[in-house]
Length: 216
Image 1: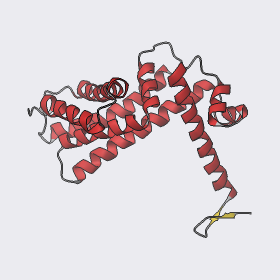
Image 2 (image 1 turned 180 degrees about the vertical axis):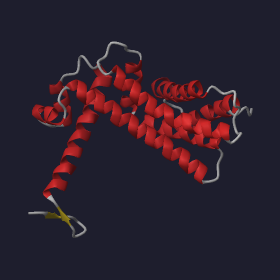
Image 3 (image 1 turned 180 degrees about the horizontal axis):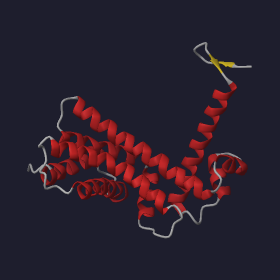
């Protein structure tokens, strides 16, 4: 039989099963990223992930073939969320009639908001960037490219519109902006937690306006 939703419609067993699986995977993602950020990938066991998520160990293997696969999916999932946040922020800024530099500034704020919401994921991502012997190195490069590409696209649009100089090295500038937000946000949360997100955004915004757009 199909269950009825709160709105009076029916929920098929397949829809219900799909919803439960998404919920379970989200719990596993959250448990894994927190544990791995706290104690490292190698020291984190499947048993610990299952216990933190409140599920049976077999549930982990039902959703993911291995701990490595869980980690790779975790990276993809997290960076996709970040990339989507950046793109939506840029689109909203230009949709309000702002310039592409305004869009870049909106992306900085969106990046800070994301990191404030998912600090463990950000710490994990940054830590893994410097490792070269992981099985998922290629996956890490792919997910990094996904986020960087969003920034590159806005930079290219800004150059095409005459808002930025054609002399700008777009790939390097995109990486620099992305890295600036990551490092500044982690430093803020670790060493300057008394500052507000508005303080941090204002400082990075001034850097953007002075160094990228050319305005003091």
